[in-house]
Image (spheres, one colour):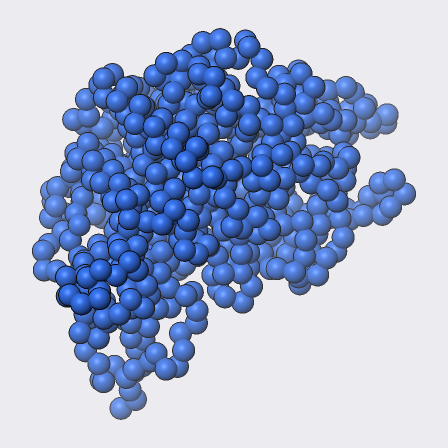
Length: 620
């Protein structure tokens, strides 16, 4: 009888840790080993090296639940997600996101896999914490090991991060700290009230803050600053839920006093991150240089921030790393954000037309008159659409805008470096609806950008490498879990909730604006709570687009009705630069569907296994 070969659990753990192909030496005959779910403490969890491998395995389990958060922006108004490059069954390639609905509405029932994989990460975190605790209790040098202490801090931070995502989406969820090696049955646990889970997450973040080094031991590892920033974010969200209410979450009673306490705590944590640890915006927040319209030899610093060149900079307070070429652990930002002209990429995500009007003038510091959508094929002669001032298809309409616009978008006649088989094909100009067509610009012949995935008249430049040499799935960019510009804006939001516009908060918002080469906010934008909130929201839109923040902001602010209109309204069209209607959202949408957009469905498969799991109100 032929022996069946099986990969040992220890090797699986180590493979998760390093992201490598399993070596032959890590294989054992099925008949030569005792099957087990996790490495046995009798053979593993003996040294600091073992614990480090286990921790890296935990990072590898958590990362695929967070490093494609840009898909969530599809649930907002400025970002279109027409599909995903995730592969079902492949945890290392974004399986948690597979099957999700990334449209502005109707998405709440589509994240059963995310729920499952987040709890898989919880199990892995508990497993690491439990075994490292046993190692510390074993005596000797392990009892006082700084390495083990740091590992505990990182594992608890990651557990807190995972539970935070769970409560953001589902509210009350089962909470447990039991290692999967133990006999206790977690499949019958009821949902724990969100307030108790919030306190437990705060405890994990606080433990991590007190334990971790100020500077991460390596790129992709957590630090004291990351723990503090994440704790502040949790407190800010808790303040938002208590201020704005969460009626879809049964048993949640909002409290103005609780909101004030939470906003105050968030502001204190953010203030400490900003002022006590020497972290700065990338390149000091300097906007850098910008090329002329239609050129891309020199791009602003904001663009570079989202390329591997910026890996390791202090603005990125916590990141998840990727292996790059040949590792099988590369990120797929190129594949998702770029089109066929860039290594056969698929343009799964693209900017919506409406985002362009959010980019302000570098001259006035305020909004420009809305762009005018015009069809350049009408009339057939004269091509007046290309020359009409303010036309969305006139390249000159985009002059003197926030530097983050050129860093983030491409519009007609903007260029980027194409590539095939990791070799440059030269600059490819984007011209909407002209896919891989021949065009002469300034006496030079080009093939236009081939990206039929776009239906707005814009494509992304953000996250798209402006050089050849890597395949579409071989990126090594370190994905930001939380970064300093976000902290600046969250601090401004928290302090504004407590005391209205404050001088230091206004200064921080202006620092974020400066990277776009915008002048400081006019006094009219900081005169009162609502004006300053609007200014903060504006910066969050243009600064954080494509980073997975907007959908969560809209829900915690209860802003869906503000953006899309109330239940039963005619709905809102998303259009393109030619003026054609593309998608209509929230047309005659019922109040129930709005409620279902504010809270996600507990997966029916989980409820089938656990009779004590109740369902969220809108999904009953």
